[in-house]
Length: 219
Image (cartoon, rainbow, N blue to C red; front, top):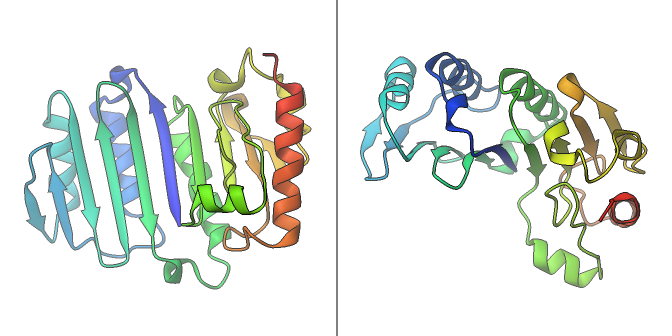
């Protein structure tokens, strides 16, 4: 399972208070109990059994381009501050999300949007080959609101959809679930279960969502 957050190019959002809040949320996530090691900086520095306070301090005090990762055998969290994009990604083994924990993952994504209001978009998806799935089922590309290919869930900030598609049309997307959340962002859950991406119902949702967004975009 993968979570990707595209934050944007404004480095001013990486102030120490926000970084601390974000690290608190990600470090103490509901799925990974103890991170085993940390890599920090563009040059590799490995810290075994990372302490959260020390990790936050290192990240806050680091200047310029930066990347930090926390790892276990089942999961990896990467936070990067680069010239062309600020990005957070988390990947977790499927076993961490058994027993319908993907619903907890969805709530976790909503927590992130509240902590990080200046995000551009969030994507949550099971780990599969995009190209193979799209080719096998002859799916079209979306090319709307920064989305090229559909995943299980997309959270789209107002800054990402404004001028491309109206909020009314976005909320009318024929997906499994669509709702407006804080700061006029829109959450689109394309299909029900992230691991059922290739069943007939999920593929039909993907076709309908793609057709709708392509028809409603203004360019």
